[in-house]
Length: 201
Image (tube, rainbow, N blue to C red; front, side, top):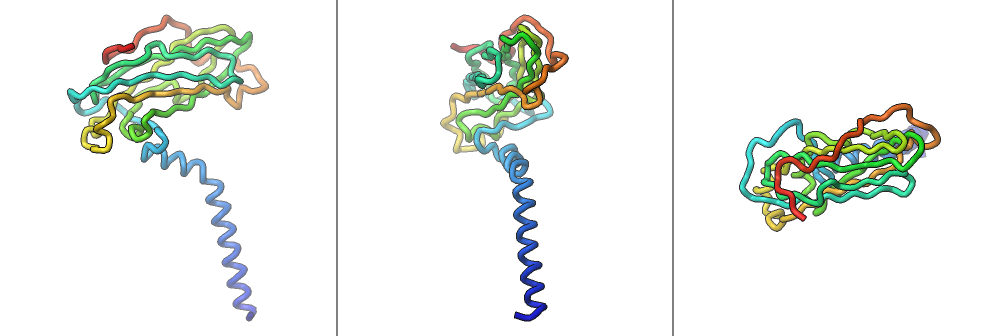
């Protein structure tokens, strides 16, 4: 092989290695972006405001709460479920209580089931957008404001969807492991039921 050929081969190998390194570095953010855009895996969407219309069709939204064993909190939904019209704004609450004798910060992951409904489940505001810090023994209400995108009515693949389950799992924040946070992100207040929609058992 000529010197020029060897140079081209080496350059090609280096380019491939650089490309693989770049893909590895950006794999997680690219996957997260893909999930946000497509709703893959039940990933919900973000909306800046209310839906443009409200339809007569109703869907039951159920609420699920789980807590990782490393986080010394109790975490639960204030309401089991609500029946909502598509496009109707809904404000629901979860409740968290710290069982620790020190401040602890938690972060919540979330998804909806069935997964195919994720791209139509729009959150306007949510406690899951930021980490939450609870002081020793504190209890807080954690709000989530959402609506179901009216575009779901045009998706024939979701005609069979009558119930959507919104699930959260709280984990101990990596930043709080091994140290004590100094302040709480939420103030303690009395639990409130979901606003808008009709509560169901």
